[in-house]
Amino acid sequence: MLTDAVRSTYTITVLLSLIVLLLLRELRGTGFLHFGPGTPPANTTKFINMPIDSWKRWCFVVIVSTLYALLVAWRSNVALNFETQMV
Image (tube, rainbow, N blue to C red):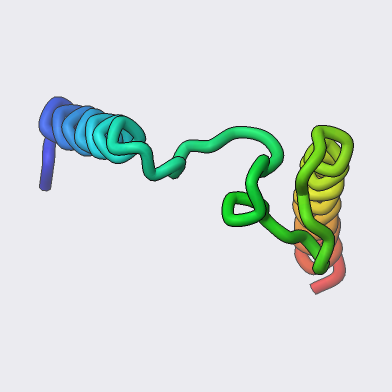
């Protein structure tokens, strides 16, 4: 069994490795950490076949994604409580 100190060391090492890898990838100019709407057509993402090429559309996608995550979390919480109380 791993001790808490060893587990913490492993976690910190993995997180730092991921950060370094992401930064190295970004420094090469891959656009992996691109934030916001796409500017050229090659860098534009589509959501429900709608190109996300403006901040208005990007905010729409963020709001829809957040509402969906909240709805799923609420539904799973309600369903879990219903199952434990009814069974």
